[in-house]
Length: 309
Image (tube, rainbow, N blue to C red):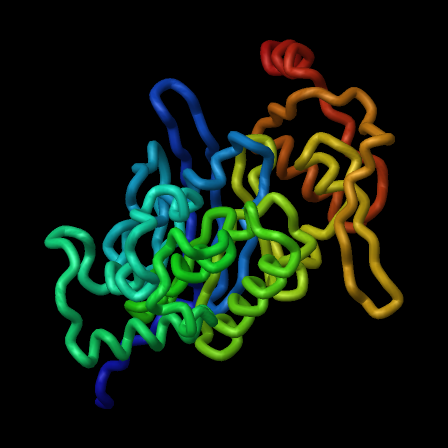
């Protein structure tokens, strides 16, 4: 018999009927999907839908109330040494008097014992990470001297210094100007294509990320779903997701853009509170209906009447 080989799972993350509660509040439920390794995935949904909670579940910071999750083939929290995480609050939480180099070194040593003298090998790793994030020329600058975009790159370098297989970013494009957003997306593209790194990005606006996205997790009607990005770029689905009319435009060159239309609201707009079965029916009806009118939704009180019958 030949030697046994350790084969990496084909997916970076797998959810099986996962649900999360905070006290008596159900955040989301019936999450069953997997994300391929080496993919770039957006996490989208309205405010309060549970996008950051989903990242926290993958990191083992928030427990499931039902179901299971595997991250890089292991239970949440067990593979965190192979995960790089950039929280939304990084730029405001960290001490702005430390240098970029010191900040990235925290990804190796942690803050428990303060700043320690780096070995030659550690210093090389720090500068390698700064280079991957395209911020190596600012290693000696203090964070207080940097723009928001530069700080965001330092945060990414800190997440990269331990050579992660999975990179999680919570709204990394927020508060960046167009140039900063474009440059950051180029960096993420480099990490994905050159290092085969799986990336998940919480985002409100898909347009800047579209050229590099392979799929999206979308929190629809209280349930997380995953689909290839081509299936998500559907006017009908996005209109239902955001509760306002959304158009998907395609240029002659094949580029796509998402554009909300504030002058045309969907008929009977109201909070979406569908059951899992109704969501499944929505997807079955919407597979070939890009650009059609949004799904007709029963108001919550009407749904309650139907369920009581």
